[in-house]
Amino acid sequence: QVQLVESGGGLVQPGGSLRLSCAASGFTLDYYAIGWFRQAPGKEREGVSCISSNNGSTYYADSVKGRFTISRDNAKNTVYLQMNNLKPEDTAVYYCASRRATPSRLAGDYDNWGQGTQVTVSA
Image 1 (cartoon, rainbow, N blue to C red):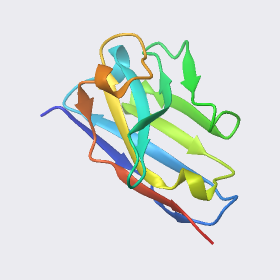
Image 2: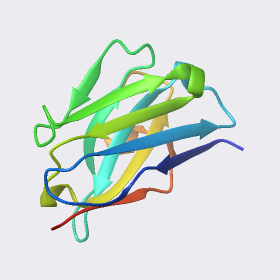
Image 3: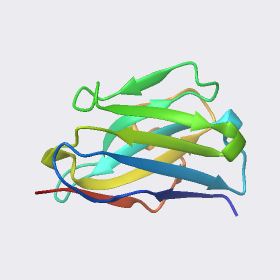
Image 4: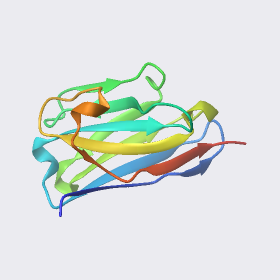
């Protein structure tokens, strides 16, 4: 069964850090671009970051640039999103998604999604 599973979310104070993981099962991530997206209550799903299959290129939304870092460990079949200096506006459900093509900022371009992990940034 092809599956992506996110983990690492939680409650953190402003300025804190979290590392999200996106683990794949049933397929090998080596040939897939991975995107991280988030959706806050009442808002549309937005692209946060994505990484190419060969780790050659990355993309970050302006709102997270300089604070978030995406990386992948193909040996562990896992992609990570390191989130530093978190802000209350980062509060959302975070999803990872895969596509067997070049990275895309658009959610509609991805065909396999995880179930999401909640990130809450609050004092």
